[in-house]
Length: 163
Ligand SMILES: [Zn+2]
Image (tube, rainbow, N blue to C red; front, side, top):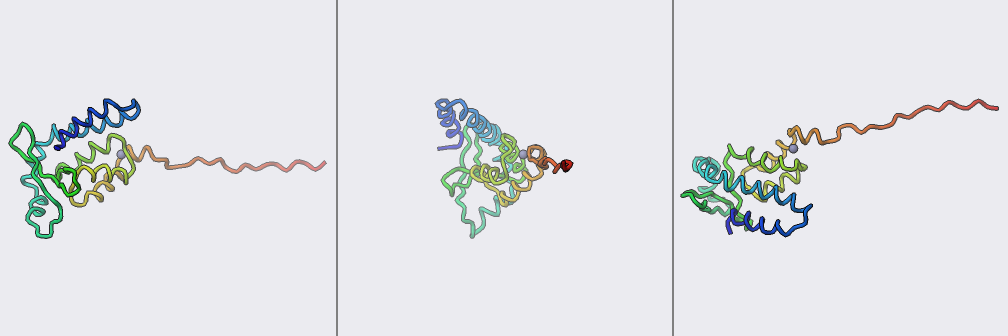
């Protein structure tokens, strides 16, 4: 099953979900459609000159299973790591921040959640470190954090006069 088929299946599933769950799913599906259908061909083109991918393909120690997945309605293929059973596109350098933003900006999750979100869908060297670094400098994430807990100062009570 191709990624773009999965998005269609997801849409069918989403139609049968409760309203509250639907909201989350719909944003996820939109992101997937945007990245795969919209940017698949351009990402595939930049993969052709990606140094990391070339090194990976020629490395004898390479443990990842790489497959060229053809993009419908084009003569291009997107290289994906299929070692986990999912087709995770190998993201070229110039696309990494774009991919991070598209997923992270949906919900501004914590660092660990963001890492999981990205690594289950995409592959690039040092992905966890990049995600941690970008999540840390995200202004929206900073604003959402509680920096200062307000505490009520100890008040002094005047000792009542002795009677
Ligand atoms: Zn954020």
